[in-house]
Amino acid sequence: MRDRPHATPRLSANALTVLRRRYLAKNDAGRPVETPTRLFRRVAGNIARAEHLYAGGKARASSAADSFLRLMSRLDFLPNSPTLMNAGRELQQLSACFVLPVEDSLESIFEAVKHQALIHQSGGGTGFSFSHLRPKHDRVATTSGVASGPVSFMHVFNMATEVIKQGGTRRGANMGILRVDHPDILEFIQVKRASTELTNFNLSVGITDAFMRALDRRKDYTLVNPRTGRSVARLKAAEVWDRLTEAAWHSGEPGVVFLDTINATNPTPHVGRIEATNPCGEQPLLPYESCTLGSLNLARFVTGPATRPRIDFDRLAETIPHAVRFLDNVIDMNRYPLPEIETITKGNRKIGLGVMGFADLLIALSIPYDSEEALTTGEGVMRFLCEQGRAASAGLARERGLFPYFKGSRLESEDRRLRNATVTTVAPTGTLSIIADCSPGIEPLYGVSFARTVMEDVHLVTIHPAFLRQARAAGIYSKRLLARIAANESIQHLSEIPWGLRRLFVTAHDVTPEHHVRMQAAFQKYSDSGVSKTINLPHNATQADVASAFRLAYRLGCKGITVFRTGSREKQVLSCANVQYC
Image 1 (cartoon, rainbow, N blue to C red):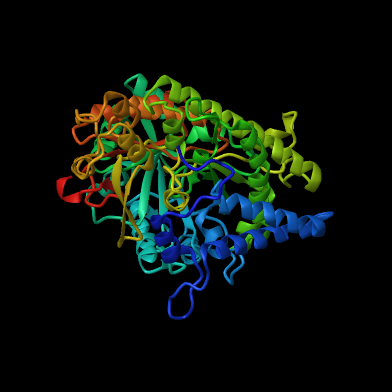
Image 2 (cartoon, helix red, strand yellow):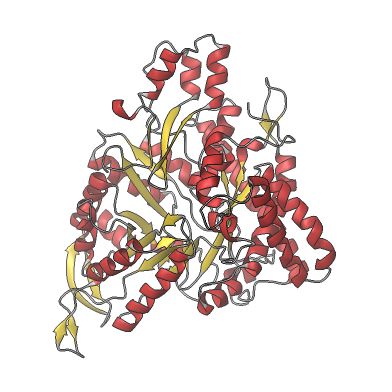
């Protein structure tokens, strides 16, 4: 079991590597000029300054800074990367997620490219719906020419991303979405079959309820020209579905987002309809909206004797209000790239409090990830986070006021009046989980031993510490065993490892696609926004497996889904540690 919650953990070697490369302030020579402790202190002090904006805040700022520092230094909670990088520094851009509108004019398209560049330079990622752009070969009245279509303009956004380095720390990321009823949908589905195309984009098809009904009934459906609003053609839903699932099987893209499911829980439909998400898909946002995310490290909330460990819900309940307050403060301390972003972000005050370290939590509780008990545990934890997070937001509303767009929102009819239009989100936490030395998001272990590629040229090898402890206790630890583990994504075939240990340390590829989806759905029940979750598939998975996962996700109420079949891309962020054997 990991360090007890009251102890301040030491940062791992991998955490220090990532902090030095990406997060710590540097001098002109590129050398770090702050320690991790000073980083946490810088961020805590800066975010606590928001207390001055509210009654009694001057007295509260000091205690808030202390509580925020404890949250981060204990690795109980970490905010999203731009907040860690930029709070208390000249840039002061603190959000990770943005959605920008792209309307059907050359002026709007290139305005969006400019705004994208500014956001990427500041460390944020951008999502776009290209569904408003007229289709390929459509009429352009001003020039008497024909349109080149949304996919062609996506290449402009992709190239702009290629030449902008995010705040000197990472390349920009984009999400591109096209509605399934857009006339260019087949071109969009196929565009990333070539690994060299749109390399700075994640792609998702915007699926509608009408399309899913047509699919179930083996019917065709209507394609609509967004410029005129008129039907221009009909396609068989099953044929489009086959193209989509085959492309996702081939390259992992596109994923899907379920637009009507998203908008059924859009908290402020009077402000606008949601058409796009952030780059990882877990944060549906209105045009120009941004969201600030943060994650609780569940691995730090285990208590009780080693023989009877349990989730420390009491300490979790004490921690959540501080995390919610932190994220609400970030909204006030943020220096937004555009005035339009500041207006709508402060109008809805969306925050996204989520979790990481879920797989570690299950291991500490001796619960296999691919069990019914794991699903129940995940749903219970997320329900608790949702209830406690909303209670904390309601407390802030009494203290500071409702979010400005509250009147007319879906929340107006509820008993609880909130400070934030959304409170919960489950983000991927890639590099944050390295800093916190825990498993990312709600994902299972990718491997007992695995390698992560960070910033394209940093390769971090990890072997799970709980496995090492239990292997030593079982008397099976050896360098030969570690070498065998490092050569494989799964340990289920290694008979020298006791069955109980193999059962507990299941990895992403030991988990069936159905269970992956059910786990995502368990957390989605209590997430105001979405859930970042990769549905890992083995290399020998079929197109039918992809189709089955997509259908199940829709049926269970997920807001989107992404699958990834091992070996379907040349570059992978995660791989087994001994690369020559993969």
